[in-house]
Image (cartoon, rainbow, N blue to C red; front, side, top):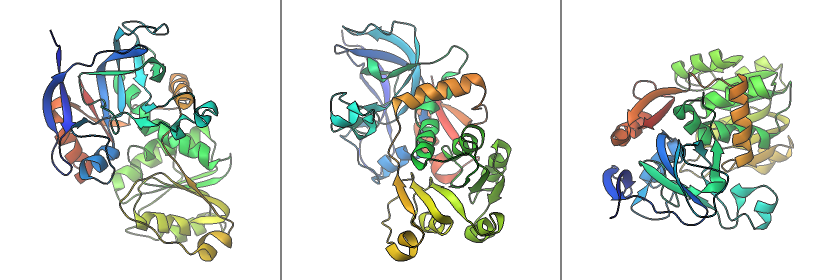
Length: 347
C-alpha cells in the first residue's frame, strides 16, 4: 500500500503554495529517507514562487534548508543508519565531472538543486543521496541545523570567495537571514578589522551591532559611501558583500569599494545592471566576484564553528511555524511582518 505524506507545493508561478497529500518518496540505491524536523524559509523561495528564479518542474515542493532524522536507508548505504540526526546539503552533483573532481560541486556539469530543480524540504519526508548528508550534533537544535544549509553556509562561501583577510574592511549590504551570519563570520572567524552593516531596517542594524558590526548605516538617512570614506580615512572597503541583489544596492555597494577591492555578488534580483568598466572596475583594479551556493565541506566547518561557540545561532531564528503555514511564512518574509530574520517550518 502506498504511503502518503503532507507536502507544500508550488503549482503555478505567482500563486500561493498548496498543502497537498502526495506519495512518500521511495528509495533508490544509495539514497536515504529523511524524516524532516525543520525546514528554513529563504528569500529564494519567494523568487521561485514569483518566477524570478525558475524551477525544474511544476508542481514542486520548495524548501532547501533541511534538517531531520534518518528514517530509512537504501541499498548500498553504509555511512548512515536509522536514527542519525542530519542536515541536508542541497546541491546534488554527479561526483564525476571536472568541477566535482576539483571539490567545486556547486559548479557541477549535472547540477541540480533540492527545492528548485527537484522536490525539497517543505514536506514530511525527503529522499536524498546519502552523500548529501552531514551529521548534526545532538546538542544542535534541528532549526539551527536546517539554516546551516543556506543562511549560514552561503555567507561563509561568499567570504571565502571574497578572500576576506584579517584586518580588512568589509561592507555588508543586507542584514537578513544571510547578513546576520555574514557579520558574525566576518568579525569572529575571518578577523575583519572593520565590519560595516547596511540595511534600511533599524531592528536589523541593531542586531548586526550586537553580533559584531563596528558601524551600521541606514541608507535612508545617510549615504553609505560617504560614511565608509569617513570611517576608513578615504581608503574605502576591501570587500563589499551584496546580499540583496537589487540594482540600487549593487551600484551603491560599488561606490564603497576601494582600490584593489572586491565586489562580491550573492543576492538574486530581477534587474540587470550596467557598468562603466573604466569608472567602476579598471581605474580601481576592482574585482567583481560571483557567489553560487556553497560546498559540502563548508557545512562540516560550520558544524565545528557552532560546536566550539565561535558562531552563535541562538538569535538567528525569529519565527517557527508549522508546515501548513508556509504561505504565512512567505508573506512575513516578503512584507517584513513582525521583524523576521529567519523563519523555519517545524514538525
